[in-house]
Image 1 (cartoon, rainbow, N blue to C red):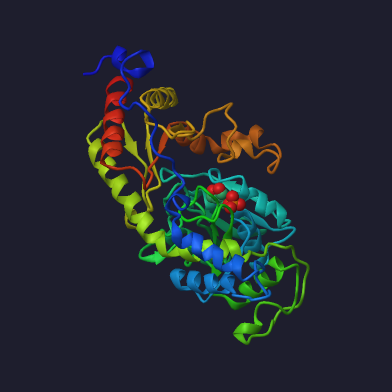
Image 2: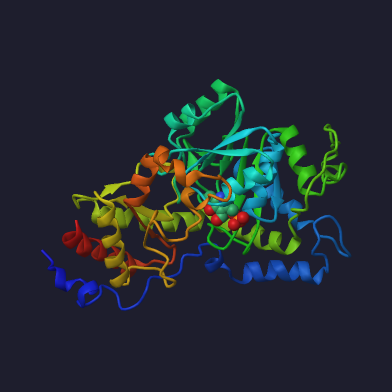
Length: 414
Ligand SMILES: Cc1ncc(COP(=O)(O)O)c(C=O)c1O
């Protein structure tokens, strides 16, 4: 048994002498391929997606490749994951007077996109998977509910079987937010291709990245047309001609969320690296989990489809929220942390600003703090959930250190 005094928190020697590697999966795999791909666009003097002096149509190429990766009929590149969510909602026909069910744990972009579409976000609790609790989703359905936003969070897919049955039973739409689970799957199908529309982000923390960027994928022609028109300022004729198609919907106003050719040049290469990056992260996570699986008092997060997770984070619940905070502080002191110190963390810490948890969305859900008791199931889980990043850059040494650090801290804190 390790004594309290041997913990680095109390002056003992830390497990590591420096922090773990960064967790920016896609960008840390940039090499000459991305550089050359960008150079081609610059040399062609054609950074705009629809035309240019020596137009290469790299965005069209990325959309084709992304569509084929996803196994969907249509894909559309946009400027960010938030833009993708907004475009997806408009594609589904969501608007003023509608309600969209979202989880209590996601990212502030989720309620923001709903509000931007003119609809009202309605919260549903999360369960031990930290994704939507299907029982609570069903309780939240009213005659105004238009869609469920299933957010696959921290590398773990939602229970899409049950959410899908609820959506079809009540004849509402199912939108998948894949921002934090890119490349993941559910029962062998790519996340984002199972609901009527899927939304991706390519921001720096994501599995593949162009710094910023996003995309949507769907099999539904009308949804695609609405998304296409909306993202391109409501232009009622552009984007289909190369596919020899015509818009079948009436024109309506839009915004400008058009992707640019430089980002697309990076993403074409990144997409070819997605599965390699995920493989490495998954291997790392499984080794770490194996090394700590016998620790009593640590409860792992429920995985609706263990085969489909991407493994970017390891999450476990301690018995009390106080223990979770102590656990986190002790891991930080052992240097089992990212260079920025943002991970490990406890998912919900009252008083710490963090856009992942609904308690920080009051500007989008007025009065939510007053009714927070309705979400005590979420708050209990989130305040006992310790999470650490699993980077594809972690090697054997890092993996051993993470295991040693968790074991050391467990023997004192739990
Ligand atoms: C779950 C989730 N949805 C949507 C987004 C929005 O993506 P972006 O930052 O590209 O707008 C993010 C970004 O972090 C996210 O984590």
